Image (cartoon, rainbow, N blue to C red):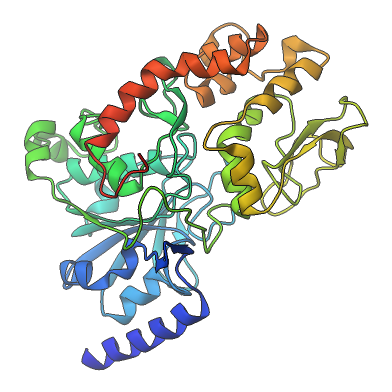
Length: 427
């Protein structure tokens, strides 16, 4: 085993040189929780591990699965979120469970047909491990997957370790706070669009605020399991959550992702603009899927040809993008990291959404819906977390007035958030 440790650390040092873990924060390199191996490897020794991971779960250029196996850790099962274990599935695509060819480990998909591990999934698991790079936006589904993973850990009395990773949008808080009637997998809890927390911090808030769906009992569970279920308070008392923190990270950090988190967030410009321009997904406007710069390019075929021209095409991350092979006109806000950060200025920027609504010829069909009637049928409202933003846009409310309407709930959220921070805040 000593020889294996030596080989592992030689490989690790080589890969850290080849791929720095992050961009610098005040002359100190940021290291995600996965790099702090001395803090969690002893907790995994001799245990059968259920690992929630995807392509971002790395130490340098080495995937966490390979690192753990080099150290003799038994990965009994892998759990995967939206976009799959290898991160190649497009948004919303259902990925079934399968055996990963590279590792030979069974992969259970927790996106599509089910969102939580069940009793069968966890019967050969001693400890659960979570390591996913998030982007810090409420409607990016990884925090919903985290919630489901935590609820199963509590229900089946499995200790859980979260290897924390920096939040690339963790330096501000903005947007409407979700209302309970608009709860969905793209928004589970009363938090703003940009909430300024890491996964580890958010997990602590889920527990501390008792937001977990602790009464959830799966239909496929055996009667024996149902009988043994003790309820939240006792499970909460016994539940062991360990967060392995990042090194040298603060909420002032501008962390640059070394690996793209999903096919349509290929670079930091897309990551930074995503909280503002993902709202186009709830409209009949192209959000730039099928272009080189998704979420930085957006528009519609009917918009004036004086605007920027682009044509969405089929690609790996968007097989059937809106207006595939159709010439569109709109805006291109792509730029360098610093240029984009200056444009955003620590806020959601909704001016393009308002301009698009004003230009769109058929106002009644601007917002896409599963059926006309209930406000909850509109995907836009699920992204916004309320029905107010849609109405404000329809009425042509000034952006300053829209932003002011968020402030009471934002201030209340900030007080809650402060209780669960692990890292120095930005204010």
